[in-house]
Image (cartoon, rainbow, N blue to C red; front, side):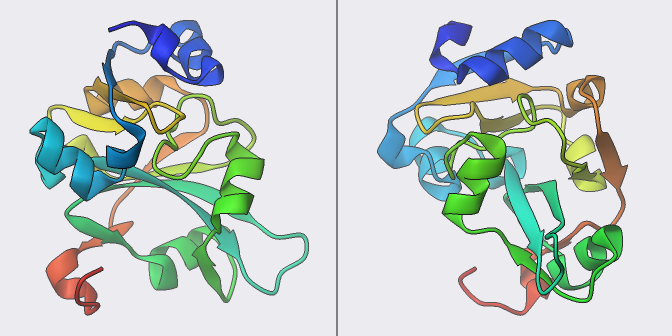
Length: 172
């Protein structure tokens, strides 16, 4: 499929940085990870979720983009707090996510994001191929996660996420 399905900023970043990828179209109502994987035949182990995190009670707020596998849970309370050097952090709301990334929740992706630190969980790098947002809810990109290292500001972090079984939050 064509890069024209992607958010233009995402397509431009992929081209400028020479990131090898494939583009998949998807129905917007199936853009969320579990529904996408079930419908399009990907496993949660192949899904790389991109999440914006915000500091709490720090002005100006600090933000970071984090990438974790669909089988894991972002460790906001330890890893992300330490990376942002703040006492409290949480997932950014949809409005903040769109304002800072220009992307809709369910389509947020690393290419096309600028001015924010990007932390990728080491486990993402161990998967031969991942699927992630295309910057909108109607496209996804599939790539070797090593391709993410071609993008500016990307840092691989050990222990950024924990396995869902150990997260202690059922149904999350």
